[in-house]
Length: 291
Image (cartoon, rainbow, N blue to C red; front, top):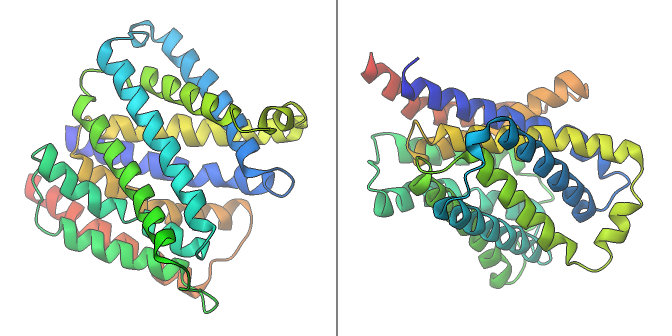
């Protein structure tokens, strides 16, 4: 299997795993506060990733780049999630979700500027097409575009944090162990969430059912999905790997149909088709040129 195929495969599995993350997540939020559940997910994810590092002994290498990468990645993730929360206080959450996906375009230009990655033909047009499909999937007649400018800037700030963290990871990916970075950044994220008043007490009161749901989310989200993404950027440019993030809502729609028996709407189907088109245009051209 050539490196490009490996990268595409890892990125696709990462997007599918991110979709599976939402199945137990949605169920848990029926009775649990989001921050408390995410803390439980992070703690279990930390244990899973740490166990992987122990099994793969060479992954327990805490060199400077590993520590630096984990700290920057963890910090940007915390700031990004905080910015999302601030944005949702003043504008429609669907608008916030859409604006954070602008990170796909940001990553392409950040990768080109800082990493000297080539912007291959159809990559940016494909990303714009895929984003338009994502916007269509999240659109509703009740969508409100009211709100002060600062809340829109918070959402774009979150997109920048997530996008720049991916560029940072790409710059050191060949010098670090993704498993080690993952358990360190989950530990840092958990520590930050524990500082929020009342969160630890609520965590200790969680029922076993919620812990089992958290284990499912931890396996698919911060463990498999995140590791697959990090391994994908070992083989393909970060601009290409990031484009696959937009596959997550498509897989979420399919998982909801198969697991939760929720029929997709016409808007979701057409939006998903547009997303697939936007991704296939540049990726299909790259594969065809290889052949």
